[in-house]
Length: 264
Length: 277
Image (cartoon, rainbow over all chains, first blue to last red; front, side, top):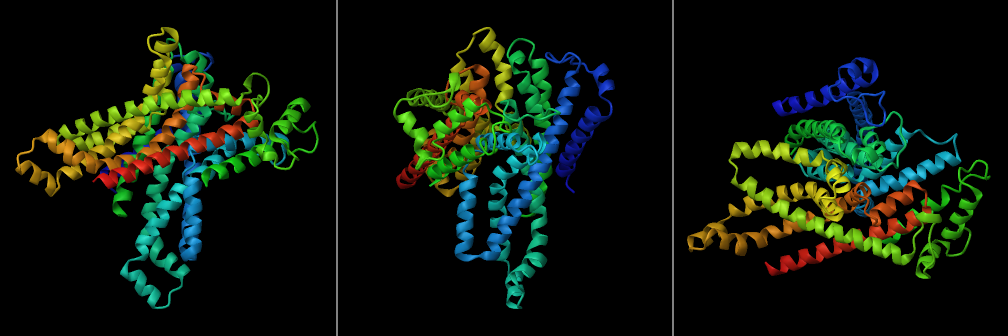
């Protein structure tokens, strides 16, 4: 593993570990030791506990939504390549239509629809966390689908794949035995690129007050306090959240870089 | 194709779900609000999905109470958002030029470290972070115009994104033979850059404008909310929060139409730039 991947992976693992420990295992210890003081609207909670607790929720949403979007994109790309010809072209036109939709706006619309559905059918409705994960995955799978389809097409032009086909290997056999090994590193790179994108989209939608999630994510934490943050003293609360988001994006981009370079 | 698709999808999504429960007790909205939804969305009527547009064309108010909007107000708010977005795009292009210039003047090692850190910093900064940091100066002290502050915070990530693309394209073009030939014939660096390199870099920049337009319009939702600008983004967010579903259906379609228009203009500019080369 390269130094950049180790640094990125270590950064992501460190953020996950610290946020989990702070938010779940020892919030009292952190509250006593937090140099940033108490929150403006929730004086019983420290800024450190709220920011790191929010990061844990954001990270969990990002991992779940990123993984779902990656798996869905991979499934659609594999189906498209297996179908081939006109059905593939038609399917990919649909993928491009979904890809062109603005993600924040669509997540807001889906959140509104899902909340309304959950209110009308409490038995069938899902919780705020699952609603957000599903909305993000539904909106962001098209990007990975396009990338996987292009990658599969490139791999499919290799000589060993042509040889396997000439020897009578079926499409599924070629996909499973010859294309998948060359795709694994790329799948990881795509997932790592989706992770910060999902976290940032979730943060923006939650900041706007559209998603109702408990415990709060980073965006929702800042969004619920924004009427107090727009006056003096708000930077004490905004800066740690910003730092955590930047570290998350830096970790994911460093970790993804060798995987994407290796698979070129 | 995208605009009618979004129009129908958002209409049916908005129309069916909130009224899906069989009886009023299960439904979490009051009977008056449910009746207003039905009226605004033309549910159960032939060509009912055109009802919100018909109401807007007649100058009637769509939605309920203070969160409702007329067609004229909607267009005025959209114009406000587009003006802020246009200003933001101009700022983003300025930052892009400065960033590309800074990258071009750095040595290889420094460039590599900048290449990882600055994009991560820009991408990891959602619009609400600089907006909240700048808000005390705008809201409390009134030092800057809210519109200018909104355009500034929206332009940061697009500026770095476009700057990275511009720097890469510039580096690629400056290594080509025609640049050496032009320099060999005695053309100065500014003339080579303006006459030969920039026209060849323009298509890469134009290709990146469509995702930037999406990011700017999405960023306007947040910036308008934080700085209290009464434009389209603020209207959209309030309509979603207050479940003004007819307004959401119409605004979503308008938003898609704006994006399609921007993409078409960029495509035309791309064709024009290609023809001029």
